[in-house]
Image (cartoon, rainbow, N blue to C red):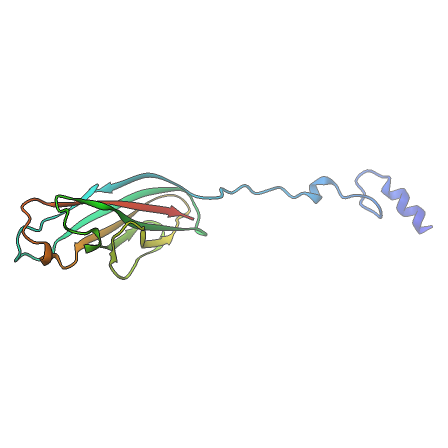
Length: 176
């Protein structure tokens, strides 16, 4: 008798008794759409090149500053960002005898997102991009910036130039 009752109820529309299938809304919950990655837009650097003056052997160490700015759209607090710097092997203009490995970069400021930090020490510049700062993305759209100080190590070795030494730096920004 119980078997007959179950079969009879299964024939009634919407009843999920023995042998009946659940309505499709219960089998397939609605999907949540999230972007797979953030987008990096509106990048800029100030200045676009770093200039060092090496004309006075008695002057302080040669330094220059730069800032990279960018916007992340579609940011998520579950993702991170990174900034790395590099230079082309022959990128010094006006000072061809100064090797690019004589130059270092050190992060000085980070703004935007949350928990942004500078690497604690100066990195030697070269053809391989080296990370100088990182942090966690802000949710949605936000502006970010990283300030850097560039120096020429052992600058006294290269003193005596009458023109400025100019270095073009490449910034690599990633958002994961």
